[in-house]
Image (cartoon, rainbow over all chains, first blue to last red):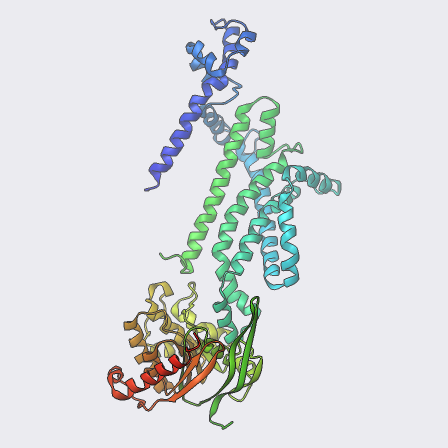
Length: 306
Length: 260
């Protein structure tokens, strides 16, 4: 509860900047619209108005300020417009409707979760290999790092097209791109976690003549859990970004990415913004779930000091 | 080698290769440790006392000479689980309770569940930690954690206990108390103990034999058989014999230091 005040302060400041920015951002569009509706606008021709900055035009037309918040297709929608659009598409539509953000959200979320599951499994297996096998240690890590330097925007359409050409469509190609983004933080965190026991801990197990399998299950794996949870939180948000990016370049008809694209192409900024916020909220909820799971697990293991 | 010798080293040498050239960690070390001995290794840092203990444990491999533990090579002895080892830090697993930590070697060595429980209870009461079985390490003081780590080393009943500055990180009051307890424990269990320390009073108070070592190269400069009785109250440290031995240890340490 102590953190509530600073959080609300920041949110309030962001909202204030946003609300203030709406006026100059939308003023040119508002002035054009007002003139068509027969209102007095200065200066009078659109060409002359182009010479003004958004701020300058707002100062010249104080009477139009209120109208900047109610445009159908604003350049920058105001917070209440985005909230209204979200309310309408999340709460008021049947969730099986193509107009429903819940429907689109589930399309993206299912690809995210499948991709995250694939990515984490792959990441953990690679990390175990890297820690136990010198050849893998030397060879896998550079490739894992190189894989992340390729822009996903360039790679995503190729993966979709290639998988499409062998008849795999829909969920799986998107999940592959999610997995591609989410395996990396898991590999890095898990390798660090599995190697976190110090030399003394490893020596202790040698004095017991413990096998490396015993060292893994009794020492390395439990010691790696705090690192793994940190990786999960990065990985799940990366997986969501991956699923959205996978929907963007391929003309997908459903999902957050598809909604953002539709809003952009058909000049419906409210649709884009609502999808953007819905995606951000989804990511926050997913990360929050993993944070809760982390707290619960570490407390049950006795690693968090109650 | 007499049958009584549990640990026997002859002409032991160990040279580490480092980036700055080779380091002679142990040079021509000869030492026999008899069954039931409490042997302390004392000397300044770099004298090889910990290295020698690690050689006995099979954690380091000597580059020359012979070393036998229970009549086997150190590595065979390690595989036979011939010793318990206590490190300077307790090194308890934070995700295991005290009981769970003591159980760790028993799980690895494949003791039955019933026997695990019985042994955990027995060694915890041996180090005065009965009733703390279900506590987590962070709920215990440093001294209690170190006692738990001693219990862990005792749990599988090895005849030899190797201790590498186990009380080095603790304050003097706690250390005195633990020294007293360790002597009682040694009297009850009749184990052979190798104990590394850099505290002269601790070495003299605990040991039946004190091995004084000096650095560069690490070697033994004096071996003192203690005339003190087995029964040792804390105030024995003010007796004439105690002060004489402490003096001899100090002389030995000083002799080893002339080249500094």
